[in-house]
Amino acid sequence: MWSAEMWGSSGLPTEAIERARPYLDAVRTEVTVGQYLDMVAQVAVTDPSSALDRAGRVLEYKSARYTVMRPSQLGAALGGGTQELIDGLGRYGSPLGRAFQLRDDVLGVFGDEAVTGKPAGDDLREGKRTVLVAHAMAQASSAAADRLDSLLGDPRLDASGIAEAREIIVSSGALDRVEKAIAAELAASMSALAATEMDDHARTAFASLAQLATHRVA
Image (cartoon, helix red, strand yellow):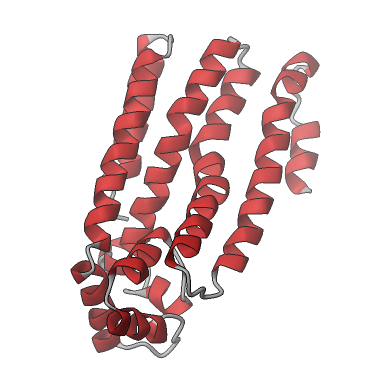
């Protein structure tokens, strides 16, 4: 509701507000749906493919469109960009937003607390059913998956428990899968950027954003 109030009182030209309104409406809906899906996804399921599907939908709607895709399109629409530019930014922003969140998921489990500013393994204590965790649950042995499931969501999880969960995730191949996914999403984003007509200053800025989003440590 606050975003609606700020939008209406922004002082921007009426024609610019109307041009960009569909993208603001879209992101409001998408992030609300994504947040709902994220809550639903925290309930464990026995079917690994279903868990991966749910985590992937959360990744797209709660993160990819909210962090990069729609804000880029919104700015382009406000600035009077062509539909071709806006569509190109959508093709750039969706995979980059997914890569950004995948990196965040990795940092939530393996990040250095002194760098990220978040308690080590906090995502494990919160029991977040991310794509990283979904891959681990799907690829680990039954015993290892059951053990990881028992560790997830334990607010008292200590350093040894975090280390055990990390080992299951690494040995299952989940971390490697996610790192490869980040690289693939980044490549797709950069390919879309290269195919989108814009001035050199803007292209450099978007390319820099892509690197910052995927190679960060915090």
